[in-house]
Length: 406
Image 1 (tube, rainbow, N blue to C red):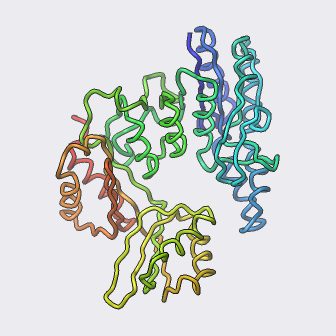
Image 2: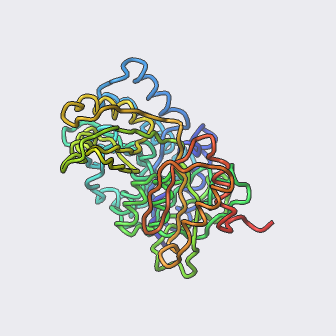
Image 3: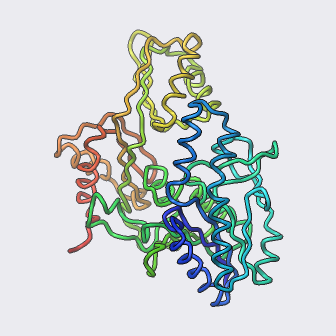
């Protein structure tokens, strides 16, 4: 007998028929003798509609009220899923984030989970009841509802699995596992049987939409075994596990891409100590995540500073920089949202040379210009023009021998 957390994304609970299918899948695990907790997202499209309503009323809306609105999607789904389970004879009860509670910090719209009181849920699971928890939401220090950012239901599920000391956290989604790249771009992409936390973290942070980045960070920190599998097909998925569980380490495990990038350049910034803090400190205070950073120092004592942010954060980034223009002392700020980030990821890169050269040669052979490069121990990322994204992904997937035999 195992203790499982089963998380179902928006497409898995998109309508009542799919919610019934979810209930049947949960019942199968309960009938097998397992203790089960369920985490649900909002029905597909619902959160987008709620966000659109907030933005239509006020583009710079109060983040606390935004959270109050967008958290309702998961409240509806958790109640409906509990009803569907009860209808087929499974004892179930819905739980909102504030009822458990899932305690978070006060960063509305991007809150971080601080702790979850799992005792009551464990007691109920041991008594045979299935808690159906609304994902994506928690309770802030001001006693108001918070949300965890887009894709936050994955984070809810992993955090709950940790708090409940679950044997595994199963993430059911519209794909049947983690692939070497997006199969819509490369039909010969292969499904990975296992992937290390570090690789999955890089893939998620670099644009692979299978798992939300912070959920993988938490799984790695708390050593929660995660399985990604399909809601619609009954077959094995991909296990996200500790590197020690992977015997044969591939040189490159996958190619990730993100079109959600914007490039910001500050020209003729004074080249003096503290200038980076003057630029990036205010952005951190504004909850803007900065990714790739490149600095070009000139002979005249100034520097050009280029970095990337998410497209959704671009307006806030520019507002913040313009408000501090006197303090920073730059001559000009420019933005470019027509870029994409392409990344090569693999724990095998630690012990092999020549990975970067293969990437640069493959892109050059197809006339793709590289604007920015960053590297880490297990990844290389480049910024290119957005319209070359698919060509670059296909070229790199082939260059590293990732195409499935066919």
